[in-house]
Picture 1 (spheres, rainbow, N blue to C red):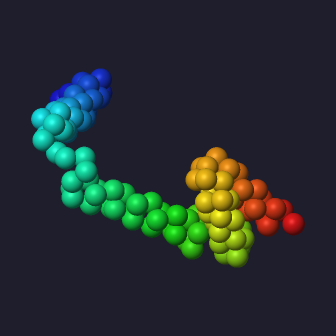
Picture 2: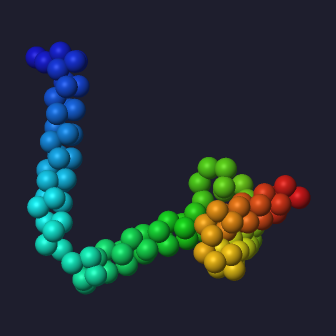
Length: 109
């Protein structure tokens, strides 16, 4: 029977091996994939879709402290944050700050 340190060492070795297999495949295939090609376009679309789904979930079905805020407050904060983001030439910092400030003002009143 393996002792606890050996189990941890084996788990670490397996995790490292799995990680390095994917990294190795990335190195092998990285030079052959066109960054402007359809594969990267598809990956970008999937990434944006996942992000949009997570944001929608946070607004519509929040968990934790965000669940205490009303749906109207969450939706208004998201709309204000998006508006400031677009008006401020896509400044992520200003958009996030505006959305957070709106949510705080709506929930602290």
